[in-house]
Length: 277
Image 1: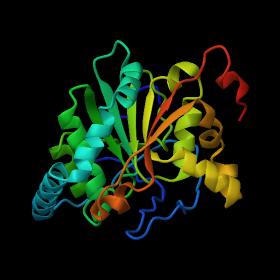
Image 2: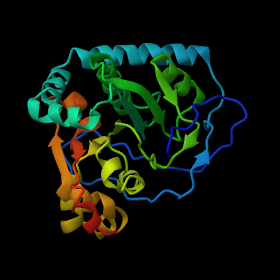
Image 3: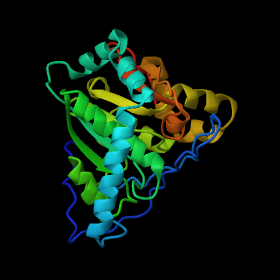
Image 4: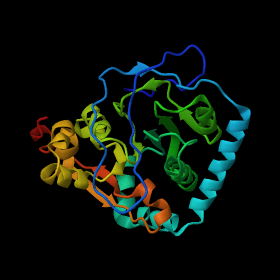
């Protein structure tokens, strides 16, 4: 979309179809990414599956998220994560994407159920901390079709806006945008790249999510379905700077293993015009 969708209100909305997000299981390091599913082309209005709100549930979930954020903030994982972002090599990439803009919007896709699982809590907690730490990170917009009304209200209490439209990952950017998409499906990354398949748009994107290099290896050696359904993910490899993060604790392995920062730098004279998808 050229501009972001309106944020969620809990009345007079239309329910949309499924968009499956597979959450990684805690355990030993594996490179088997979720099964690829290509979302429907149409962007649809959305309402939570569970539209009932419960003040007690909301209060408990806010407290749970506050504890989660504090745990991450005091962890070695977070200190290492911040130190890596602030290395000249990576920070210069952020500055290049920002250009003359003061803020970089954050869009979170596929966060999962923050009420039901610890992994989405850690993923959301880290995003909240990034917003608090860096003044150049602007508004946060969130979408996952499995979010409940209670979860949506909790997200709003932490300063996030919940989208009222399922964009299917097809947000066309016009300003610098950080897409925060840990452990989403390959098809969702592909939709995002497809929607921005041009020099100007690609130069405005930072993407945090599954390692594209891992997808490339996975497609080459293990699964042709990835090659068929994630063509833009694979094609963008040669214009991508990827920095894989370090998970220094088992506590955060399930939420962030095989995750990377991705920056795209197409050459206006050559690169993207030669990549035909």
